Length: 245
Image (tube, rainbow, N blue to C red):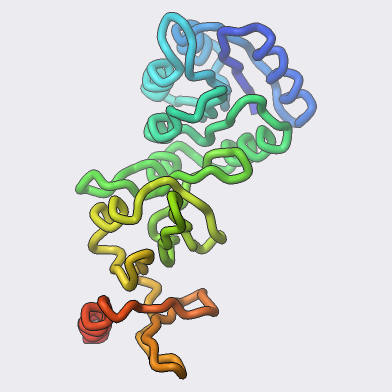
């Protein structure tokens, strides 16, 4: 794939260029130091991928990405930044991936493979929100990098001190959203079984009682059932009945 590197700092561009060379299998077609130059370079050089910094003088990378996405055949965008505070905005800009500096060779290779694998239509589907404007993904930090978890893949959400554990088809991750916020946002997808746990309707198998008389729910893909607090038993029973009708 043809790659364009955009960063206002020359040493950062050089380091990325070196990583691209180490990864191999790609052609570095140019560099740019500003958002305006990046847009012009995309129109002129027709890269397949842009490695784009977010914080630059004379217009940030998010603004440049919006202009790049309006090109007739836009390249895939991978944001590269020292800051994690623009992650959601970056994914809203239909970025393939979001790399935090200093970029590791393994993560760059993974992001470039993702860019090769996804076409623009798939990227748009990945980033779109529901018709009511709600998120379709949760954002987590995994091994220092930011990743998206599809809401449809989430089995349950469990609060643990200031974090929430997300159990999903790909494993488990921690997020910083509050359980109350998630319950309010996704009330039609998840139901509360305990003060510290929400369960996805779509993965519910049923309600049962343990040997010691406690109620618990079983979920597809989870070996261990989750405890239902006495306070929520009646509501869960009613939900199970309605889902079974």
